[in-house]
Length: 114
Image: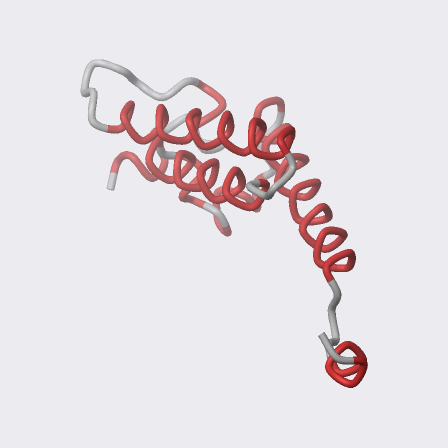
């Protein structure tokens, strides 16, 4: 890569890793928060998190962000993606009801009722 093209490049590889790391931290914090407490605005702004398929796609997306050439990131991203696939499969098993933390504040099934 020439010196001129290096200077024109706005975000280098190290900066991309920092930005992706920030996204992973935000997605992880949101996931942990939803496991313990559901803020009322979440059911309004992110209703997809209250269905198995919506949460599964969210996990697959978060896992795909981690995939990189580093071995530990590949393992972590793959594990999160597999959990996401599990959530997607659970959507199509009618005998399984969503747990309490996947229901909105009114105790209803949320997005699953639609």
